[in-house]
Image (cartoon, rainbow, N blue to C red; front, side, top):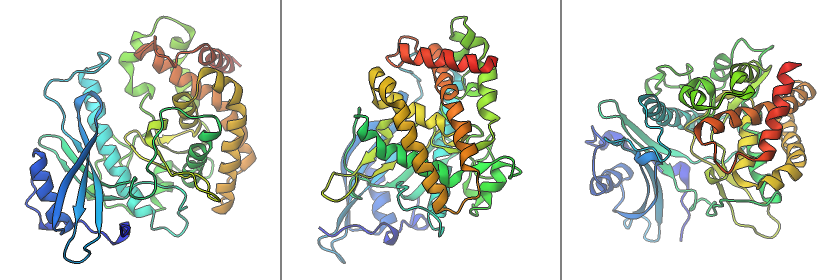
Length: 392
């Protein structure tokens, strides 16, 4: 079978009579057929439902019998359809939660617009694998959204994991370090993150939803889905404790760090796709699901990733070595980019922030789901150390 060359595939929405996205799958099939100008589109499979019933992710197969008889490719459609009756699996179905979720999908669209452009830059690192977005559409009336994305299975990343060994985490840690390194800024040298990032690319603001988001990129002003300002209900639900009383101070400490970057914001192992192991080649990964991308300290991604794929014992035994892996890769990335950032100062600050970032997620966990398996003795121990740092 002939491989799909992503850059050569175009989606032409101008040919479509597609004013609203409240369609069924049969109409989506016709829409994709016209948009890709192919002979046949078939439903592959539903990959998953979106959190709290907000839509689905579906694979569609594309066939062009006229020009390439053997060419069969596929795309992934992320179809956001907010439910009329909201039902959060843990009971958090407030209006605030609903609007946060809708905003997150707009942010994801904006991230893909940004990445499509910035990947064309001469200094973009090919190892930072992300899916290409062929087309996106947002309906402001019914708040539905469609993303047509590259199928990472077909692009050489067919494996998914729910847990990893410490050694298996390294490709993901390196991906995070490269992503953070590419967007890294020194607040002492830059007037502001938005201005610095804007200088890297020109965005078409007509495609960017910036209401209440960080301009000009339309991302979260503070990245991560557990950011304190977006989780007042969960904070209120926390039992009275030093962590609860210090939550604002902890948040401010992270947000005021000298070195800031774009963070993924939901860097769990489920949001990484892995290549197969082959002789003489390292495993590579691609990342997806950029709903909570925004500014922040890279340690927020790092600690959340470790907690998503390692056991408590593995975290306790290996976090220091894996943190070393992260900083080796981060500094290699800055060297490749000829960055003038003070690497020693960066490492010193972010090593200090490691426990702060861990405690920040623990703060969210204790309000959102205190009986969660991630609420471990190790996590509470690191949190206590972080709070002691705030007292210094």
